[in-house]
Length: 166
Image (cartoon, rainbow, N blue to C red; front, top):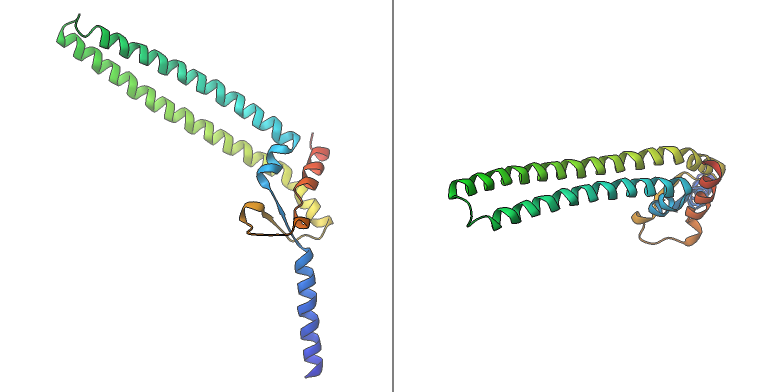
């Protein structure tokens, strides 16, 4: 019985010590945005998204101008012509709304794909760091209620990723 108790206590203490040193956390948003490869990616994504948004705003401005012309010509044209103009305008407006929705979905899908590719690229560096430092679990900082700062490996990983991936 005493031997069993000693073995049991040994395993509990051993597993407690192992668990304490094998968990770390990272701020994933910071990791993605502060690495050189992440900065470049987000800069490129923001630039293309801004261009697309400007393009959509120009189309929206043209539609607004067309709407104002229809309103201004309301008293100058026949009622039938006004109905036709309004009908055409509504069709153009619906087409624009559909286009805008489609373009925004494409932008979001592109962003998601690029971020996933970035994660795939940096995962090899993170995995090798885990192996070297005997870490079994890395948790995103957002999912932690409270933890000691010594378990935060974000800055270390940022440095490693910047050195490893150019």
